[in-house]
Length: 231
Length: 237
Image (spheres, each protein chain N blue to C red):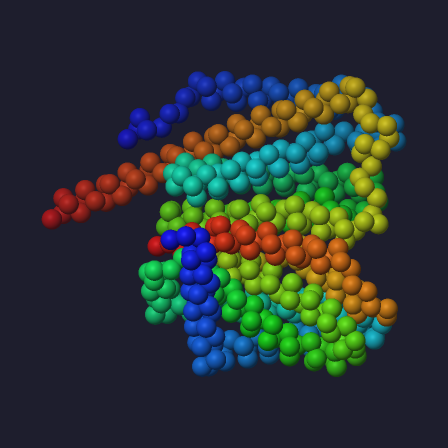
């Protein structure tokens, strides 16, 4: 098989896994509803803990937002592998004559998609609750959110595959994931904070850090992710 | 079975004595032989061990990375033993540098801790490799454990430069550590520093070696256990 046919095959099987994930989720909406509600609760609880003035919200809002998202994602990413365990469907997926990376990539894209949906609900709620206008910077904010979410989904999906094979897996994933996401958290809060300021400004250096993070870990997932699925 | 281990007791004892002597000389050099620093005085002497264990920690984590990649390519348990040994020893040096840092920082900077690039990335490193050890404890099957922890180890190692540079950009207003600012070290100080780095590196290598031997002995014990269980079951029938 030549390389372009291989790539086409990989993309096709990735898309198959991706649509399978979506189909499973859209039958029940269990994961999405609980993630969205959880993220909203975290953002909500922050206002009691810090009682921020509008000026505080502009300064710390980016942090609230990203912490809420990271907590929600460390909760949400778990089932992408553990729910395959109930009927041992992961073994069936692994047996399929496809590149094992397609399974990781399909789940990664699905998790990315679910997180983006969560953000679409979280951001307007955040904007209203904390009186931080976001519409003016919507385009730039979307770029920041997409880069940050893609990195979270990449590392998160790989680490969910790691944690799903250990005992105490529910506890383990946040433990592994949150320290590994530190660079992404720094860059994404930095970039978002710039956008929430009185005179919004997009720091391209933070975007570069995020793009670099995404690239490094997507490549690592591509090179090493397949090892996690062998039986 | 027993001849599988290439343990060499005389060599181990000899190496231990040499390393102990090196560490002893380094302690003598750091506390007695090296001159007092002009502005920081006696306090500065902790730096011979603090900075050196930081460097040695990085060396040990490089050993871990080599073990992780080696395992995924070669699939020999020996690479996994090397990685675990490296993590444990590296974490020890990591802890030493994290503990000695604040002891120095409080009198020198006036604060125990500062969120600058070096400190924070050392701390993130500590958290990552502690979770590496935790992950290993939570997976029973030795082969799965080796594969999974190798992948995690590679991700953790790749994270380190990203952590360092992102924090560096985050905190550019912070002045860099003042160690080399006052026109460098006196030749005597530099000699002591280089020697204590060599001594701690030798200590690291010795400990990784010992730990590796221990892991290979454990492996043999596990195999013998399986074998004896198998025999007992056979005898019962």
